[in-house]
Amino acid sequence: LTSPARFALLGMELFSSRDIVPDSRSSSKTVRLHRDPSWSLLDFYEIERSVRWICYRRLTRVALQFPDGLLADSYDVVSALKTHVSPHVELYVLADTSYGSCCVDEVAASHVAADAVIHYGYTCFSCPPG
View (cartoon, one colour):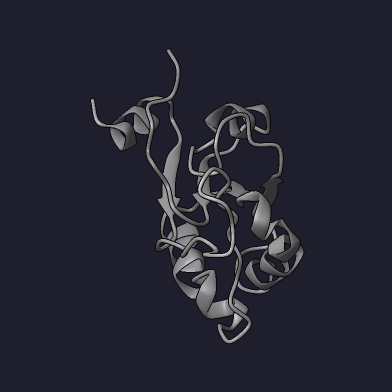
């Protein structure tokens, strides 16, 4: 099965934002991601698209996964999403990635019984263990 299909079998939906460009100043071994200040938070994190995705699927528990270099924006992203989704939608920030920042952390998402994961940044779609 392809990785997105594996997530469906786990009972979890997956959404990934557009690729975020790695910071060219970082070493080749460590890829640090950053948000260019010229991009608005709403555009960079595709808030409108994320809200439509959450509402269309009637999700109630959504995990938001950020690469380490973008965690500083997580509070603002949650605030922006909260202003547009139902007050019954619970949002959880996954901040302790077990593998690489590009790997969707479905284990952490399952710990909060998330219906779905929104993964910000590049996603490799590696297969979940098992």
